[in-house]
Image 1 (spheres, one colour):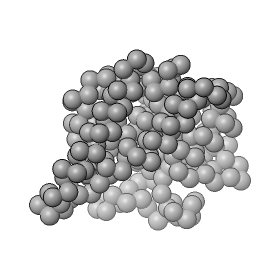
Image 2 (spheres, one colour; image 1 turned 30 degrees about the vertical axis):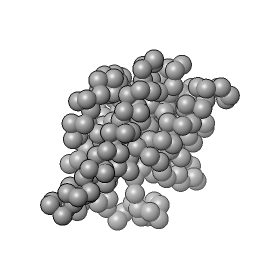
Image 3 (cartoon, helix red, strand yellow; image 1 turned 180 degrees about the horizontal axis):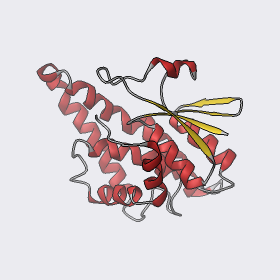
Image 4 (spheres, helix red, strand yellow; image 1 turned 135 degrees about the vertical axis):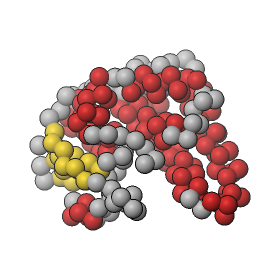
Amino acid sequence: MIVVHHLNNSRSQRILWLLEELGAPYEIKNYQRDATTRLAPPELKAVHPLGKSPVITDGGLTIAESGAIIEYLVDTHGGGRLKPAPGGQDALDYLHFMHFAEGSAMLPLLLAMYVSRLGAAGAPLHPRIFSEIDNHLAYMEGALADRDTFVKTGFSAADVQMTFVLEAAATTGRLASYPRLAAYLARMQARPAYVRAIEKGGPYALGT
C-alpha cells in the first residue's frame, strides 16, 4: 500500500492529486508544520533523513522528492497513463516541464518568499528576483499559446508538477499579467481529482 507522508500546505498535496488522477489506492499519514517556524516536524526524519515532504512509502520502498515520486508513481502505478509515449516532441516537453518546475521555476519564488522576511534589508535583491520570476512566467505563458496543457496531447503528470509552481506565484498576485497561466491554474484546480485531493488532504493555502 502506498503511504503519503503528507505535510500541510506543502508539495505533498500534488502527490495526493496525482494518486487521485491515477485511481491508485493509498493512505495518508498527516504531519503538521510548527506553528512558529513553519518547518516540518522532526517525526518526518524517521521516514527519510531529509525530514521533508513529500515522501512516500510503497511496500519496502521509500521515495522522496516531488519529481522522483511522480515519475515512480506514473511508471509503477500508472498503467501507461499521464505520460506521453517515448520519442517525439511531446515526450521531450513532458521531460522538460517535469524538471523545469523544481529545477528553475521554483527557485526565484522561494527566494522572494525568504527575502521578503528580511524587510528593508532584502530590498536590493528584489529587482533581480522579480525579473527572474517574470522571465519564467513569460516563458510558461508562451508555452501555453497553442495548447491547454504543458504537453500538447493533453493532461499529464507534468501538469501536476507545474501547477504547484503557479499556485506559489499566485499567492503574491503575480499571475495577474499572465492570463493564460491564470486560466490554466483555474482549469487544473477545477479537475475532480484535484478537488478530491484537497478534501482528503485538508485545507491548502501556500504562504501560510
